[in-house]
Image 1 (cartoon, rainbow, N blue to C red):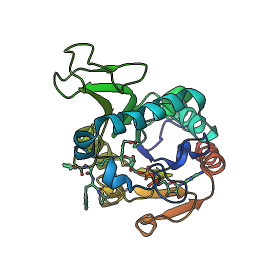
Image 2 (spheres, helix red, strand yellow):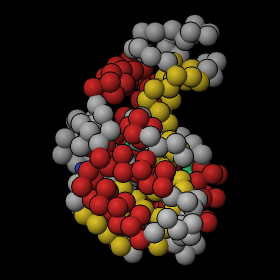
Image 3 (cartoon, rainbow, N blue to C red):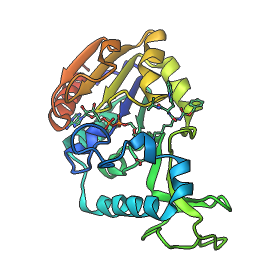
Length: 235
Ligand code: BJW
Protein backbone atom coordinates (compact mmCIF):
# COMPACT_ATOMS: atom_id res chain seq x y z
CA UNK A 1 0.00 0.00 0.00
CA UNK A 2 1.35 3.44 -0.91
CA UNK A 3 2.00 5.96 1.83
CA UNK A 4 1.00 8.77 -0.53
CA UNK A 5 -2.71 8.74 0.07
CA UNK A 6 -4.04 12.31 -0.33
CA UNK A 7 -6.02 14.08 2.39
CA UNK A 8 -9.57 12.78 2.16
CA UNK A 9 -12.81 14.26 3.51
CA UNK A 10 -16.10 12.39 3.16
CA UNK A 11 -19.52 13.90 3.91
CA UNK A 12 -22.48 11.57 4.37
CA UNK A 13 -26.23 12.23 4.53
CA UNK A 14 -29.44 10.30 5.05
CA UNK A 15 -29.06 8.41 1.75
CA UNK A 16 -26.27 6.23 3.15
CA UNK A 17 -28.60 4.89 5.85
CA UNK A 18 -31.70 4.52 3.64
CA UNK A 19 -30.97 0.90 2.76
CA UNK A 20 -30.53 0.12 6.46
CA UNK A 21 -34.21 1.04 6.83
CA UNK A 22 -33.95 4.63 8.11
CA UNK A 23 -36.06 6.98 5.98
CA UNK A 24 -34.51 10.06 4.36
CA UNK A 25 -35.87 13.54 5.11
CA UNK A 26 -36.97 14.71 1.71
CA UNK A 27 -38.70 13.10 -1.22
CA UNK A 28 -41.27 10.31 -1.22
CA UNK A 29 -41.66 8.62 2.16
CA UNK A 30 -39.73 11.46 3.83
CA UNK A 31 -39.44 11.46 7.56
CA UNK A 32 -41.87 14.07 8.83
CA UNK A 33 -44.88 12.89 6.84
CA UNK A 34 -47.24 15.78 6.28
CA UNK A 35 -44.70 18.29 7.60
CA UNK A 36 -41.76 20.00 6.00
CA UNK A 37 -38.69 19.14 8.05
CA UNK A 38 -37.82 22.85 8.01
CA UNK A 39 -41.05 23.57 9.92
CA UNK A 40 -40.63 21.03 12.68
CA UNK A 41 -36.90 20.46 13.28
CA UNK A 42 -36.59 23.81 15.05
CA UNK A 43 -36.18 25.05 18.64
CA UNK A 44 -39.50 26.92 18.14
CA UNK A 45 -41.39 23.68 17.40
CA UNK A 46 -39.90 22.16 20.57
CA UNK A 47 -40.90 25.19 22.66
CA UNK A 48 -44.46 25.05 21.22
CA UNK A 49 -45.08 21.32 21.75
CA UNK A 50 -42.17 19.55 23.46
CA UNK A 51 -44.01 16.27 24.05
CA UNK A 52 -44.87 15.92 20.33
CA UNK A 53 -41.25 16.50 19.35
CA UNK A 54 -39.97 14.15 22.08
CA UNK A 55 -42.35 11.37 21.03
CA UNK A 56 -41.10 11.70 17.46
CA UNK A 57 -37.48 11.43 18.58
CA UNK A 58 -38.30 8.55 20.97
CA UNK A 59 -39.62 6.59 17.97
CA UNK A 60 -36.41 7.30 16.05
CA UNK A 61 -34.23 6.41 19.06
CA UNK A 62 -36.06 3.08 19.33
CA UNK A 63 -35.72 2.45 15.59
CA UNK A 64 -31.91 2.48 15.95
CA UNK A 65 -32.11 -0.84 17.81
CA UNK A 66 -33.87 -2.46 14.85
CA UNK A 67 -31.44 -1.42 12.11
CA UNK A 68 -27.86 -2.33 11.23
CA UNK A 69 -25.08 -0.79 9.12
CA UNK A 70 -25.18 -1.67 5.42
CA UNK A 71 -22.29 -2.37 3.00
CA UNK A 72 -21.77 1.37 2.40
CA UNK A 73 -21.08 2.05 6.11
CA UNK A 74 -18.74 -0.95 6.29
CA UNK A 75 -16.88 0.13 3.14
CA UNK A 76 -16.13 3.57 4.66
CA UNK A 77 -14.83 1.94 7.86
CA UNK A 78 -12.61 -0.30 5.71
CA UNK A 79 -11.37 2.74 3.80
CA UNK A 80 -10.50 4.58 7.02
CA UNK A 81 -8.52 1.57 8.29
CA UNK A 82 -6.55 1.29 5.04
CA UNK A 83 -6.03 5.01 4.34
CA UNK A 84 -2.55 6.25 5.17
CA UNK A 85 -3.13 9.95 4.58
CA UNK A 86 -5.31 12.36 6.57
CA UNK A 87 -8.89 11.11 6.74
CA UNK A 88 -12.10 12.63 8.10
CA UNK A 89 -15.66 11.35 7.87
CA UNK A 90 -18.27 14.05 8.50
CA UNK A 91 -21.83 12.86 8.85
CA UNK A 92 -25.01 14.90 8.93
CA UNK A 93 -26.77 11.79 10.21
CA UNK A 94 -27.87 11.50 13.82
CA UNK A 95 -27.92 7.67 13.69
CA UNK A 96 -24.96 5.63 14.98
CA UNK A 97 -24.51 3.32 11.99
CA UNK A 98 -21.06 4.65 11.03
CA UNK A 99 -19.60 3.89 14.46
CA UNK A 100 -21.34 0.53 14.58
CA UNK A 101 -19.65 -0.30 11.25
CA UNK A 102 -16.25 0.61 12.74
CA UNK A 103 -15.66 4.25 11.71
CA UNK A 104 -13.62 6.19 14.27
CA UNK A 105 -12.42 9.46 12.66
CA UNK A 106 -16.00 10.67 12.57
CA UNK A 107 -17.76 13.96 13.34
CA UNK A 108 -21.53 14.16 13.85
CA UNK A 109 -22.12 17.74 12.70
CA UNK A 110 -25.91 17.54 13.36
CA UNK A 111 -25.59 15.72 16.69
CA UNK A 112 -26.50 12.21 17.83
CA UNK A 113 -29.83 10.55 18.63
CA UNK A 114 -28.28 8.52 21.47
CA UNK A 115 -27.34 11.68 23.40
CA UNK A 116 -29.53 14.19 25.24
CA UNK A 117 -29.17 17.76 26.42
CA UNK A 118 -31.04 19.60 29.16
CA UNK A 119 -32.24 23.04 28.09
CA UNK A 120 -32.16 24.23 31.71
CA UNK A 121 -28.92 22.90 33.26
CA UNK A 122 -26.87 22.05 30.15
CA UNK A 123 -26.47 18.33 30.94
CA UNK A 124 -25.15 16.59 27.80
CA UNK A 125 -24.72 12.82 27.90
CA UNK A 126 -25.72 9.46 26.44
CA UNK A 127 -29.07 8.41 27.86
CA UNK A 128 -31.19 5.37 27.04
CA UNK A 129 -34.97 5.04 27.17
CA UNK A 130 -37.88 7.33 26.29
CA UNK A 131 -37.54 11.12 26.76
CA UNK A 132 -41.24 12.13 26.62
CA UNK A 133 -42.55 12.90 30.11
CA UNK A 134 -39.12 12.35 31.68
CA UNK A 135 -37.40 14.77 34.06
CA UNK A 136 -33.75 15.76 33.65
CA UNK A 137 -31.75 13.29 35.80
CA UNK A 138 -29.53 16.16 37.06
CA UNK A 139 -31.78 19.19 37.67
CA UNK A 140 -35.28 17.68 37.54
CA UNK A 141 -36.57 20.04 34.79
CA UNK A 142 -39.60 18.65 32.90
CA UNK A 143 -39.65 19.23 30.04
CA UNK A 144 -35.92 19.90 30.09
CA UNK A 145 -34.40 17.02 28.15
CA UNK A 146 -34.16 17.29 24.39
CA UNK A 147 -32.27 15.14 21.87
CA UNK A 148 -28.71 16.35 21.27
CA UNK A 149 -29.41 17.11 17.62
CA UNK A 150 -28.93 20.32 15.62
CA UNK A 151 -32.16 21.94 14.53
CA UNK A 152 -32.64 24.73 11.97
CA UNK A 153 -31.29 28.01 13.27
CA UNK A 154 -28.79 26.24 15.55
CA UNK A 155 -25.09 26.10 14.86
CA UNK A 156 -23.77 22.71 13.73
CA UNK A 157 -21.03 21.00 15.74
CA UNK A 158 -17.29 20.88 14.99
CA UNK A 159 -17.33 23.58 12.30
CA UNK A 160 -13.77 24.76 13.07
CA UNK A 161 -12.38 21.24 12.68
CA UNK A 162 -14.43 20.75 9.50
CA UNK A 163 -13.23 24.04 7.96
CA UNK A 164 -9.62 23.09 8.68
CA UNK A 165 -10.04 19.65 7.08
CA UNK A 166 -11.74 21.12 3.99
CA UNK A 167 -8.94 23.65 3.59
CA UNK A 168 -6.29 20.93 3.38
CA UNK A 169 -8.15 18.11 1.60
CA UNK A 170 -7.22 16.92 -1.88
CA UNK A 171 -10.30 14.75 -2.34
CA UNK A 172 -13.84 15.58 -1.15
CA UNK A 173 -16.63 13.04 -1.53
CA UNK A 174 -20.32 13.59 -0.69
CA UNK A 175 -22.52 10.51 -0.28
CA UNK A 176 -26.33 10.38 -0.12
CA UNK A 177 -27.08 13.99 0.67
CA UNK A 178 -29.53 16.28 -1.14
CA UNK A 179 -27.54 19.50 -0.82
CA UNK A 180 -30.62 21.27 0.56
CA UNK A 181 -29.18 22.12 3.97
CA UNK A 182 -26.38 24.58 4.76
CA UNK A 183 -23.60 24.85 5.78
CA UNK A 184 -23.02 21.19 4.69
CA UNK A 185 -24.25 21.92 1.15
CA UNK A 186 -21.46 24.49 0.78
CA UNK A 187 -18.59 22.16 1.74
CA UNK A 188 -18.06 21.12 -1.89
CA UNK A 189 -17.42 24.77 -2.83
CA UNK A 190 -14.91 25.20 0.00
CA UNK A 191 -13.06 22.01 -0.97
CA UNK A 192 -12.99 23.06 -4.62
CA UNK A 193 -11.77 26.53 -3.74
CA UNK A 194 -8.80 24.88 -2.07
CA UNK A 195 -8.09 22.77 -5.17
CA UNK A 196 -9.66 19.44 -4.14
CA UNK A 197 -11.09 16.95 -6.60
CA UNK A 198 -14.79 16.46 -5.78
CA UNK A 199 -17.03 13.41 -6.25
CA UNK A 200 -20.76 12.98 -5.62
CA UNK A 201 -22.13 9.50 -4.87
CA UNK A 202 -25.92 9.56 -4.83
CA UNK A 203 -28.98 7.63 -5.91
CA UNK A 204 -29.74 10.36 -8.43
CA UNK A 205 -28.51 13.88 -9.25
CA UNK A 206 -28.99 16.27 -6.33
CA UNK A 207 -29.69 19.98 -6.22
CA UNK A 208 -25.93 20.66 -6.11
CA UNK A 209 -24.66 17.99 -8.55
CA UNK A 210 -23.29 20.58 -10.97
CA UNK A 211 -20.78 21.72 -8.35
CA UNK A 212 -19.00 18.33 -8.30
CA UNK A 213 -16.32 17.39 -10.81
CA UNK A 214 -17.26 13.69 -10.89
CA UNK A 215 -20.43 11.69 -10.22
CA UNK A 216 -21.53 8.09 -9.59
CA UNK A 217 -25.25 7.40 -9.38
CA UNK A 218 -26.90 4.34 -7.83
CA UNK A 219 -27.78 2.90 -4.40
CA UNK A 220 -25.11 3.57 -1.77
CA UNK A 221 -24.82 -0.12 -0.80
CA UNK A 222 -23.54 -0.80 -4.32
CA UNK A 223 -21.68 2.32 -5.45
CA UNK A 224 -19.83 3.13 -2.20
CA UNK A 225 -18.11 -0.29 -1.82
CA UNK A 226 -17.26 -0.23 -5.56
CA UNK A 227 -15.72 3.25 -5.27
CA UNK A 228 -13.76 2.28 -2.13
CA UNK A 229 -12.33 -0.85 -3.79
CA UNK A 230 -11.35 1.20 -6.83
CA UNK A 231 -9.67 3.88 -4.72
CA UNK A 232 -7.72 1.38 -2.62
CA UNK A 233 -6.71 -0.66 -5.68
CA UNK A 234 -5.06 2.48 -7.09
CA UNK A 235 -2.66 2.25 -4.13
C1 BJW B 1 -29.63 7.79 -1.60
C2 BJW B 1 -30.29 6.60 -1.33
C3 BJW B 1 -29.54 5.44 -1.49
C4 BJW B 1 -31.71 8.17 -1.02
N1 BJW B 1 -28.27 5.51 -1.85
N2 BJW B 1 -28.36 7.84 -1.97
C5 BJW B 1 -29.67 29.99 2.84
C6 BJW B 1 -28.33 29.77 2.63
C7 BJW B 1 -27.56 29.19 3.62
C8 BJW B 1 -28.12 28.77 4.81
C9 BJW B 1 -29.46 28.99 5.01
C10 BJW B 1 -30.21 29.61 4.06
N3 BJW B 1 -31.46 29.70 4.55
C11 BJW B 1 -31.50 29.12 5.77
C12 BJW B 1 -30.29 28.68 6.07
C13 BJW B 1 -29.88 27.97 7.27
C14 BJW B 1 -30.41 26.54 7.39
C15 BJW B 1 -30.65 25.91 6.03
O1 BJW B 1 -29.78 25.31 5.42
N4 BJW B 1 -31.87 25.97 5.53
C16 BJW B 1 -32.19 25.40 4.20
C17 BJW B 1 -33.51 24.68 4.29
C18 BJW B 1 -32.09 26.49 3.17
N5 BJW B 1 -29.39 25.81 8.10
C19 BJW B 1 -29.32 25.81 9.43
O2 BJW B 1 -30.13 26.39 10.12
C20 BJW B 1 -28.13 25.13 10.03
N6 BJW B 1 -27.48 26.01 10.92
C21 BJW B 1 -26.92 27.15 10.49
O3 BJW B 1 -26.93 27.49 9.32
O4 BJW B 1 -26.33 27.86 11.51
C22 BJW B 1 -25.82 29.15 11.20
C23 BJW B 1 -24.34 29.11 11.01
C24 BJW B 1 -23.74 28.16 10.21
C25 BJW B 1 -22.37 28.17 10.03
C26 BJW B 1 -21.62 29.11 10.66
C27 BJW B 1 -22.22 30.04 11.48
C28 BJW B 1 -23.60 30.04 11.64
C29 BJW B 1 -28.57 23.91 10.86
C30 BJW B 1 -29.12 22.83 10.00
C31 BJW B 1 -29.67 21.70 10.88
C32 BJW B 1 -30.26 20.57 10.06
N7 BJW B 1 -30.93 19.66 10.94
C33 BJW B 1 -31.53 18.43 10.38
C34 BJW B 1 -32.30 17.70 11.49
C35 BJW B 1 -31.33 17.00 12.45
C36 BJW B 1 -32.08 16.25 13.54
C37 BJW B 1 -32.93 15.13 13.00
O5 BJW B 1 -32.41 14.23 12.32
O6 BJW B 1 -34.12 15.12 13.29
O7 BJW B 1 -30.52 17.61 9.81
S1 BJW B 1 -32.62 18.77 9.00
C38 BJW B 1 -32.19 17.32 8.09
O8 BJW B 1 -31.58 17.72 6.84
C39 BJW B 1 -31.09 16.62 8.91
C40 BJW B 1 -30.12 16.23 7.84
O9 BJW B 1 -28.83 16.00 8.39
C41 BJW B 1 -30.17 17.37 6.87
C42 BJW B 1 -29.68 17.04 5.49
O10 BJW B 1 -30.48 16.08 4.89
P1 BJW B 1 -29.84 14.98 3.95
O11 BJW B 1 -28.96 14.09 4.75
O12 BJW B 1 -29.24 15.60 2.77
O13 BJW B 1 -31.14 14.10 3.58
P2 BJW B 1 -32.22 14.33 2.41
O14 BJW B 1 -33.41 13.54 2.76
O15 BJW B 1 -32.42 15.77 2.13
O16 BJW B 1 -31.53 13.70 1.10
C43 BJW B 1 -31.23 12.33 1.00
C44 BJW B 1 -30.39 12.09 -0.25
O17 BJW B 1 -30.03 10.71 -0.30
C45 BJW B 1 -31.08 12.43 -1.56
O18 BJW B 1 -30.17 13.16 -2.39
C46 BJW B 1 -31.38 11.05 -2.18
O19 BJW B 1 -31.28 11.06 -3.60
C47 BJW B 1 -30.27 10.22 -1.59
N8 BJW B 1 -30.58 8.81 -1.44
N9 BJW B 1 -31.62 6.89 -1.03
C48 BJW B 1 -27.73 6.74 -2.11
N10 BJW B 1 -30.12 4.23 -1.29
